[in-house]
Image (cartoon, rainbow, N blue to C red):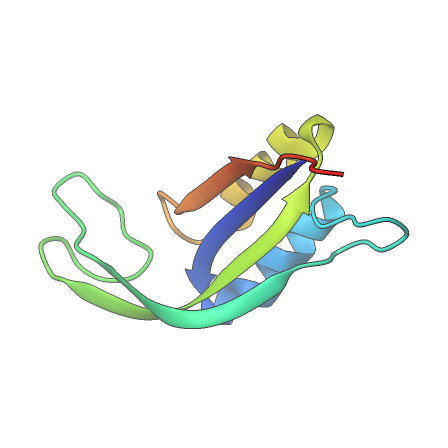
Length: 104
C-alpha cells in the first residue's frame, strides 16, 4: 500500500479527486474515493522553457492550493499517477509517494 500526496489549485481540486478515485486511488475496504484535504499556499517561479498554467516566466507566483492525500495499492499506483498527470492543470505537478509498512 502507498500514501500519495498531490498539491493542486483549489479550483481544480474536486475534478482531480474524482479522477484519482475513478482510477482506483483512495479505496479503503468497501469505500472508494477516500481522501483527506488541507489548504495552503503554493509558491513557484516559472523558468525559461516552462509553459505555466498559472503565472508568468520569471515572476514568483503564489496560488491557493489544496493538498490531497490518499492511499493506493501497488497494483493501481501507476494508473493513478497517470490519471493525476492527465487531470492536473500544472505542467509539473508536485506528487509525493510513500510506501506504507503494515505493522499489524
